[in-house]
Image (cartoon, rainbow, N blue to C red):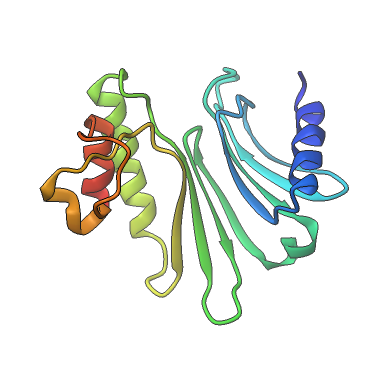
Length: 167
């Protein structure tokens, strides 16, 4: 399905549930851009080599789109959006991490890039990381202060450990 057809479907679903802002993963849209619908603006970051894989996007309801001050398409797995808040600005980082089965080089590159992106966010911004980390967070004692006690999984997987280390 072409991007415009997908955008309309996504926008109608978001409108049906009255969602103001949504982070999307695995969009599989190539390149970088912004699509407009009657209800939303969808900012996206895809593979710049024309490959239809990965991809992240942030959909914003038109009524709050004026609060968007910046969008950065980092790569096909990370994008950021900065919003003007009443008291503080908000930076949303949309992520789509490599799967658990991916090789360590891909995971290392993803988390190094994510750390670099996070380090560039202004100190006083509220920072939200939203997305698919492909991670299982366990109940290990070492992570209790970071993740708390309530987890679905007993043990963290490699991606979970990487995510917790980042936090």
